Length: 170
Image 1 (spheres, rainbow, N blue to C red):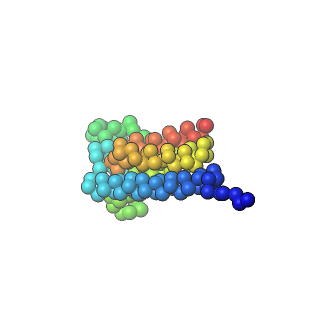
Image 2: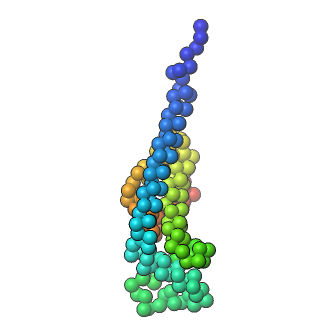
Image 3: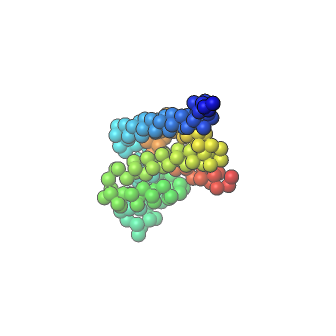
């Protein structure tokens, strides 16, 4: 008597895994296209990126010895109390690209996508690979998340650091 392997749980799990990977890649590609479309239509992004983070980054990149100018009272509207972590990263990117606008957009892209991938891997480590893929797909299909990332808001890097901290603590 031959054993019928067509109904085995391993085969069903493998087929499900293939479909999940396919959908994960598809949703990831859609998220990337949405991100790029928004960045191309608004290359300097919104108020936060343009007037807070990128202004500070340009101060740091152009005149690092006079960093105090970054906190000038004349720039009261630029929230001088905000930390310099994000402007420092953007400043480094600007110095590598000769102040090309691709640097802040690339940094925003990296933080946006790495948060989704960090979520996927951490959930997969805690639960299963399928749960991790579902978690990342959920984040990829959240328009607010992609818009925040493409708008170069500081909320996305902060979310990445919060998620990293929560993962390290759990």
